[in-house]
Image (cartoon, rainbow, N blue to C red; front, side):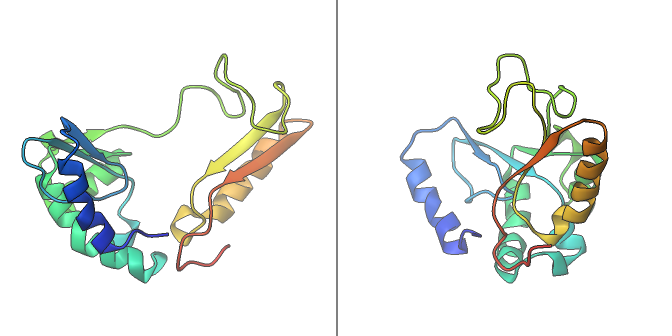
Length: 174
């Protein structure tokens, strides 16, 4: 579900009571200026800005109302790609010196668990798998992910697909 604007804005009073040094908005927006608290916001893409039809009305309303103010007050904007960093500069005039790029994912090759990690429930330690973690919505381009899985699976005798996450409010499953 997309948090209601009111929910995000009312978080501010609860956050102030916590005596924080840093607040991290992990999903595009911040709850507003928090005096004495450094603020970081992560931006994954600007699909909602470029192609509003890929977002639910509720998500568009939230992002249109809160994205700009969030990027202006953020001490740091974390973008998950250089393209997203450029979009933050172009669409919201975020100074490049306040943007850091941090790519999603880890260093291990596809289908391999990091050393010491337990396999997902129902899989043996040497099973190969492909994991999609996220909401199912048009901007995630699920058909491309499925084709990637099919190519991945062709390289192994047995490989399973795991999907964790739900349908995004206001979108249709693909």
